[in-house]
Structures are given as C-alpha cells and as structure tokens.
Image 1 (cartoon, rainbow, N blue to C red):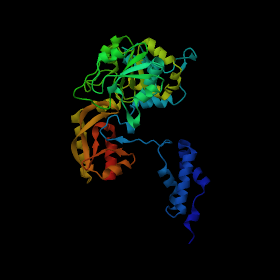
Image 2: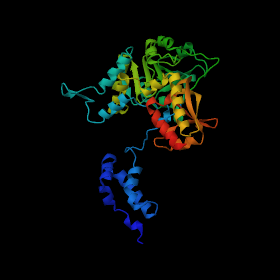
Image 3: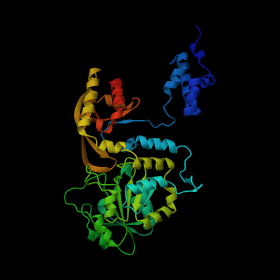
Image 4: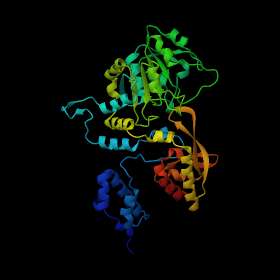
Amino acid sequence: MSDPRRLVPRTDVLLAEPRIARAARALGPVLVKHAVTAAQQRVRAGDLDPAAVVDHVLAELPATASSLRHVVNATGVVVHTNLGRAPLSPAALDAVRAAGATTDVEFDLATGQRARRGRGALAALADTVPDAEAVHVVNNNAAALLLCALTLAQGKEIVLSRGELVEIGDGFRIPELLTSTGARLREVGTTNRTTVADYAAAIGPETGFVLKIHPSNFLVTGFTAGAAIADLAGLGVPVIADIGSGLLRPHPLLPDEPDATTALRDGATAVTASGDKLLGGPQAGLLLGTAELVERLRRHPAARALRVDKLTLAALEATLRGPAPPVRQALEADLAAVRARAERLAADLLGRGVEVAVVASVAVVGGGGAPGVELPSAALSLPASVAARLRAADPPVVGRVERGRCLLDLRTVPPEDDDLLRAVVARCT
C-alpha cells in the first residue's frame, strides 16, 4: 500500500482551491499560506487525512486578519480594561466601517477646500457639554493631561494634593507623566486631608496651574478633607480638573462620580476625561474648557503627535449622537430583567443536563470609575472547572471564579448575546 503522505496536495493546488482562494483575498496570502503549510505538515506526520486538508485549513483560519478576538464579557465588570474597556455601539461600529474607506475627515465637499479635522465629532462633543466654550480631542486621557502640562506648566509648578498623586494600571504614575513635561510638582496637604488654604499658600509666580485629580480607582475614607473645584477656581490661577472616567453629565446611579458639566460650572478652566469608560466610546482624551486655553492646547506642537485618527473620530461622534452605548445599557439595566434572563438561560441549560444555578451577583463599573459603587445583578453559577473551557471556546466567554464556582454575570452580557452564551456554555459543560 502506498504511503498516504505522498498524496499531500501541493501548495499551489491548495492555494488555488476556490474556498481557500477566497479566504486568501479576505485574510491575506501570508496568513492563509501559513495555515496550508501547517496542515500539510500534519499530513506528513500522519495526523491528518490528505482528503481533509482543505476543510482543516478553512476550520483553522481566523474570522479576521487581526489576532484580536471577540470575547463575551461575563465578568460583571462593566468597563473591563483588560477586555478593551467600552465595547462600541452598533452605530459606532457602522461609523468605523464607513470611516475605514476614503473619507472627508479634513475636506469640505461643498467648497473643495481643506476643512477642520474631526469637525463632526468636535461639534457632537460641544453639543453634549454646552458649558464648555471649546473642546478638543487627543488619543487618551493621559495625553490630554500631558498637553495641559506642556502648554501651561513647562518649567513651572503644578500644585496638587498629596492625596491625588495616583498610580493607575500597569504601574503608570501620574506624577511621573507630569514631571516628564519639564514641570515641577508642588505637593500640598496630606494623604487624607488637603484644604483650600494649602493650595493658596503654595500659589506664586511660578505656578502654572492647580491640578485636581479624581482618585478614580480607590477610596480614602474616615478623617478626610478635600478642596472643591469651586473654591480652587477663586485662587487666580488656571484649574485643570482630571475627572478621568468620562462622565459628561451627572448620573443618578453615580452621585459621587465627578462629571465634566459640573466641573466646568464650578469654574474649572479645563476638564480632561476618557472616551472609552463611562462615555462608552473609543479610546480618546477629551479636553473641554475655555476657548482661550483650548485654542492654546490645539496649537501646541505636541498636539499633532497626540491627535486621533479618523476611526476614533467616527466612533466618538456616533457614540455622542447615537443610541445608548453598551456601557450605559449595562449600567442602567433593570435588575428584574437581568434576573429573568438568567432564569431563562438556566432553565434551558438544565434541560440539556448542565449543572447550573442562578445566584445573586454584584457587578462593578470598572475602568477606574466609580470605586465602591455596587450594581446588583444575577449570574449563572457553574462548576469552577468550566471557566478555563469557556475561555478556550469560540467565542471565548470570560467570567469570574468565586468560592469554587464560575459565575457568568448577565449585567455585562448584552441581551442579544444570550443565545450565543447558551450555546457556548452547552458545548463546554
């Protein structure tokens, strides 16, 4: 009997096969050829039937040319930094697809002349926060703060509370960002108590601005005191308020979370915020403030290095103009509706022989926003051993393990993904 490995299809024959050729046009020839080569090697090793090579190659190819994969977030963390923070709304995804082609991002179709970059997104942001005289967008909140320091405090002092010298994810420290611009930090107060008088005593000819940072990823309780923006605004120097989480207006579920509108009304010269947290849009740094300062920020040489691309501008505008994004939907989800979804899923899975129960759960905002705020929720409770299999599924489902159980929190799973979640859980249990 002849060796079946001699029947391995040639590479050129496989690449010319209509289905593989279509995949190469969609994903690129390099990625597809790699999958073909790997399949041929399996045949030579005797692990794959030569007749199954084409089907195997197609099964091994990813859905897109990117290594990033769609993940079902069942962690109960609404804005999960490791899962990409805010998922975009369908309207924003449509806008990104349209912007991926040739666009009028800096072109006026009526006059045939150059136009201001991102004017639609900037107008949407200005309309959302009318208390801002002017707005600007850079590539993230750290960049927004960096631009403020470069513009107002290079070679000068930034006055800020010792209780606001924060570190965020991956060891990133705000003080180090600020001093990298050539500014000097003038620390005032103590870790737990800083008063207006502390700021006033530190202000002098070398002051660039007063910085008010919201400690968004931790809480200090007990014997504490802090200065309000309204009080700092009367000290005669610019006040920059880094609110962080991107809440543009007050929200009843987050009474202690600072928002851009209130900060501006209280007298902040400028507010910096993230676009991919509570706003629910793409990664972006939002700058809202006085017309004079925003124009200085926009004209600073570093602004060019920090600018956002057309995809971000499109997603941001669609988030601001369009329907409620997934973050807001998860935040405002009705507990009874979340519980009812969990009950329906559990009933169906029980009918398939899956060991599952519905339990009360507590979701959180995440992403450094609203620390201490608990969002009542409901979760599917499965054996802890299922967690790894769910992460390895297609698509992966990421839950959390608590007290020997794998919990899939439904608050962070969009209702339209319930059928998908049910199918994945059924396959993995």
